[in-house]
Length: 336
Image 1 (cartoon, rainbow, N blue to C red):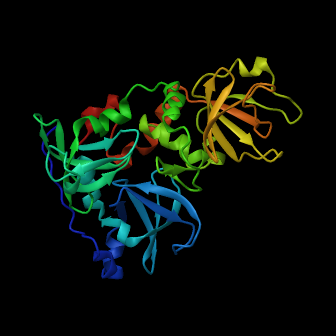
Image 2 (tube, rainbow, N blue to C red):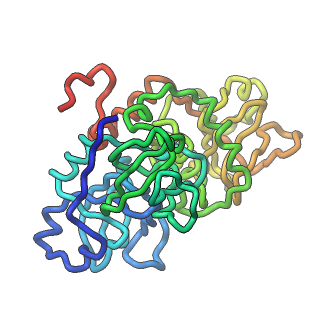
């Protein structure tokens, strides 16, 4: 990776004094903390509807007092506290898109340090979470570390093994069976309404987090994720799920449920094989879909099962590539 250093002109606290005209010019923003909360309305007490990760490009829709309404790459909207964001112009977004970047691909939190050795906890610059996107400044081969720039201009060293070049991340081979395998690393993770990180997640935030680690951005909610992938099973209203139907499922299939006896999707998890689903309900857990089995949960009423096929994965990746400044492998010669 070539050396790249881009320091945006917006610093922490600038949002508080920015004029309306200045805000109008800054049509995009990036979280400058590992994860920022997205609320359904301005205010810390308002419903947590989702979360957005450091470095993710967001479109700014409007501004209300100390809050900005933003739209995520998958089209989800919510209000974020302004001091959690670095605001950028279209030109600055373009510069970010053309920079060398890495994405954190650990299972859990890691850290950026003041020095490449990264052993002294007193020299930590910030914590980092899976999915955080950072600009590369330089590499230190001896210490296997990368000097990175955060959206607000801070710099720090991260371990090379903790990050993946962004273009490699989104073009990696996708194995759906890796999703339920990875999910087991989070057994017992607490349920958090609106959450989508290793600090807490709801059902669809959990499935989204796992897919994102493999370069696929699913829609945010279960009712939206049902439009991702290709349906391999749809349950008629009067049908009871049987072993024959379950035998057609493959590890990594998205399983959509209603958990209250109705026919509206309100829950999602990944098929884990052997008649099991791994999902976040109260906590990340494994339940059997087979009546009579240990761990069977009769409230898990399956409505649909979707498979993340190569074609559907390609479509999901292609949707966010322009905003991330990435192009399909066949079009790499066209990148400016």
